[in-house]
Image 1 (cartoon, rainbow, N blue to C red):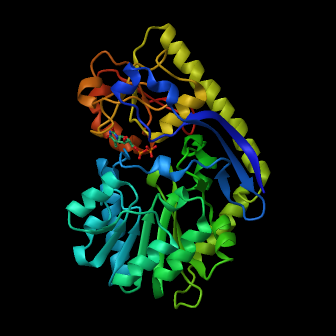
Image 2 (cartoon, protein in one colour):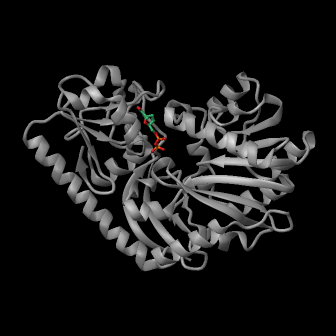
Image 3 (spheres, rainbow, N blue to C red):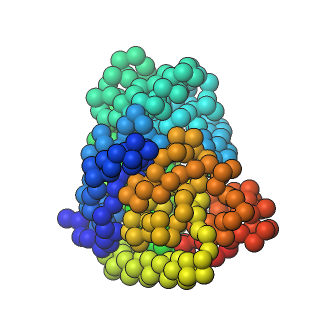
Length: 397
Ligand code: TYD
């Protein structure tokens, strides 16, 4: 059913940062790799990766990503929480994939339920006295929640639904949990933006699907839910936010739906050839990035990477960029520091230690925070330091 259009080669699990011991004792051989390729489903227009990794390998008690590490994300979750409260006035809200509580902290503790499978993250929201279910989202969990709670008016989820292979199970569980006029709002990286800005690094083990409106309309047509509003937002280099309700509820479809449907049809997101052309641009991006890094290294420039992102793991493993080009990676996340990047084993250190005066170039692994980082690192730029960014084209800033 899925037709392959992109091959990003042998890749590790993006969240599995290695520790010193593993590197020292040469236990690296055990590192898990799989083949990362993406395909297009001609029937429902859904773009997904071809081979799914077992979620139990991914969402562990050592999950590294902390959503509250970025000022941009804190602000954007606060903004959407305020908007949703104003628009839908929910008595009770539930979040699927609550991470470290960056969204739910904008709600009163007795008005929100958190669902999070990663033990280390669920512990944080529990310690902050939020009702937290440490589990994967499923009909079984929904039934368990409903034993102690009424149906909820708002379910929210950011960067989680696209991580779940079985979408039919997701929507059945949502349908069980939502009140009659309740809404399900979820946002994930947008395939329309990926195609537009060539951000092929949005493909990795966790991003099982990359949604379009056209694909979501097809998928939901088989359920008792429907999309009544949609937005394209700037988050993570372009995301899509769906507003979903029960088909028999009182929510009216907005004009945004028609507009985006038209735009996606124009962009040909329902045609396989669009993805084939994208795949050629990805190959060119790899060539351009390797050419640039080789040129800089020939001039003995010191290059580091800024942000130990999952996205940069895709780039480094696909382009075969290791210690030959990049000295180390800097990242503000405490539980990434002192570790090594998956696959290429580049050491990760704090920006305070790593962004020293000898750094000539920093590859912007966290390009989705370009504005925030350029603002923060004015002195690096002032003294002649430069950033390398690979989207929409390989360039120096
Ligand atoms: P994220 O945007 O979640 O990307 P991905 O989903 O691909 O991992 O991660 C951003 C990373 O960049 C995160 O580890 C924190 C780090 N970061 C910094 O080190 N400094 C910064 O100023 C910002 C904004 C992020």
